[in-house]
Image 1 (cartoon, rainbow, N blue to C red):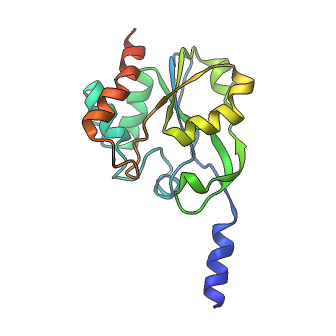
Image 2 (tube, rainbow, N blue to C red; image 1 turned 45 degrees about the horizontal axis):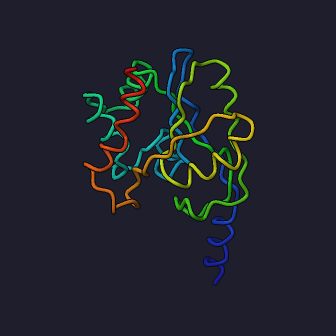
Length: 174
């Protein structure tokens, strides 16, 4: 019984975002997730769970092989893509976006004030909803929602994801 109570207390603790944003003054596109998964927090980089299709989509759209975190950071800078999450801290059970409560949003003004962001894309509906509630009022920049690359979004085939996410490549290359 003590173990069950202990686990329940852990699940209800606030979790803090431990991954810094990737961006520079030449960033033109900002892609926002909701909050890093457990695997991403452990690996200290975005979309670190091997079943998440984000990096596979980027590889297919831009023609890169992104094997390491350094490869991924170089790709983002070269293609002028900024990457972060909407949420700085929250209560969350595991990696379940639907369980996110008690949100404190990241301060996106850091990116907006030092980059030339032309478009904001959200990775999944939850990221879109959180952005609209916590970030849009201060940024005034309307996000473009994209389907989640999470393995939980299994109803979207890889081909459908590529088609939907191709708008990012179009924006970056314009």
